[in-house]
Image 1 (tube, helix red, strand yellow):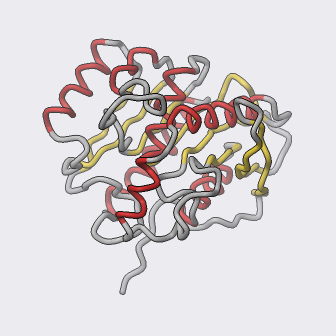
Image 2 (image 1 turned 90 degrees about the horizontal axis):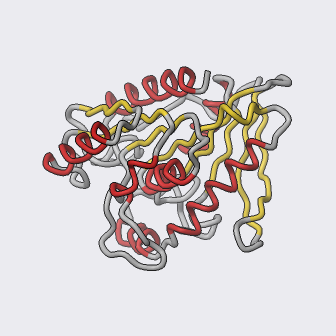
Length: 259
């Protein structure tokens, strides 16, 4: 069987160092994240990555290392603080994944993304004005929310945000992400498949309308033949052409937006 492979080809580079770091979240609780740094003194741009609903797995670590290889310091945030699904490599246990996603505190997880942003800005190797966010699925929702809150961010790369609207509003989900798009100042790249059940044609048209009427500096890319989570390395989600094209587009966009 052909191996499914999205994003960068490797997670190991001679010019990249990676480590697990500890951050202090809002409220004082400590949580772990991953940090990948290119060789050299910088100053480099930086990107904070929101992992998808599986939590941090080999794919998201390759993304972090691959962006560092391209010259970008990366901080990878696990929305569950490394206490999520027992096997982050398993995309097939949909019921387990949805149980964790449905119980996620999006407010706390968004603040974790913002903590990662502030940590990146404070690194001696990072230019604090050239920081962006990037995410996949649920992690893209968190990146979107972070971009709505932090108007200093220079770029946002959003691979098929899974929650353009929440099933219901509450303390953990206080506002629909699509209703907050007006607040984004960052240059924003949004990627969806044209068969994404999360973003049917009517909602896609409304997303496009809002991005335009609210003057969000954006590119909206619709990937033909792809459904939701087309970078996820499991059948039937994975779509090789969309994953390859999306990676190339996203890296080029980030390097341009972050200068």
